[in-house]
Image (cartoon, rainbow, N blue to C red; front, side, top):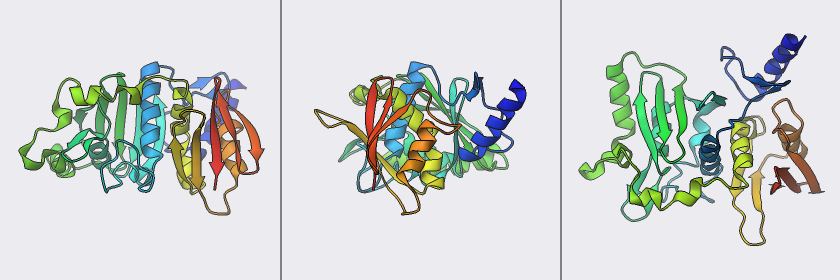
Length: 280
C-alpha cells in the first residue's frame, strides 16, 4: 500500500509542478514528497533566487540590471523547478541564457548585477552547472534540447555570455574566489527567519506563473511593515487557489498555515515567520 500511495502522490504532484514525465521519482518523507532541501546553504541560496525571480521591470530586485529585466524575465523561460539531492535543477528552454543573466556582472554606472558569488562549474551540451561560493549551494540549468556536440555548445555559450566580456574585461564569475564587491552583499544570502519560506515558494512557483498566470512580487519586510508576496492576476484566479496550493495540496509547504484577513489578504506563516499574501 505505501508504494501505491507514493505513486498516486507522485502522479498528482508531477503535473501540478510541471515535472517532466520521465523525471526521476521524487524523494518521499513519510507520505509527502520531499520538495525542499534541508541544507541551510542551499535554502539560503534558493531564498535569494526566489527574490530575484519574483520581481518585475516595474518592481526590480536590487541585483537587477539597470533599464533591463534580465532577472525579472527569467520565469518566462522555465519549464520545471525541482530539488535533487544536493542540487537544485531548473529545466529551461535556454540554459546558457539563464546562466548569463544569473552570473554576476559589474555595471560601470550601477554596480553589481546578477547573483554575487555565483560561479560556473562547467557546461555541456544540455546542462550548465553552477555553484554559489558563500553558501555552497548547487544549481544545474538543464536545457530542453541538447546541442549536437561541444563545438556548437561552446559557440552558443560564448554568444550568450559575450556581454560579460565587453571592453575586453574578465568576467566577474571567472574569479575563483569572492571579490570584495560581492562580499559586500552578504546580507542578501544570510540565513534569516524568512529563508525557509522564500525557498519553499521558489519550489512551488511554477504553478503561480503558469497555471494561475500570476506575476508574483516578493517584498522584504522592514520596521513595522511585514514581508509580502503580492501578485497581479486575471479574474479567473482566486486568492483561495494560491492558498490551497501552498497549504493544502499534495505539493503544499509542510507546516505552513494561512490566516485570512479579507478575501484577498492574509498571512502565510512558517516556523514562526509570517508574510502577507496580497492578491490584486
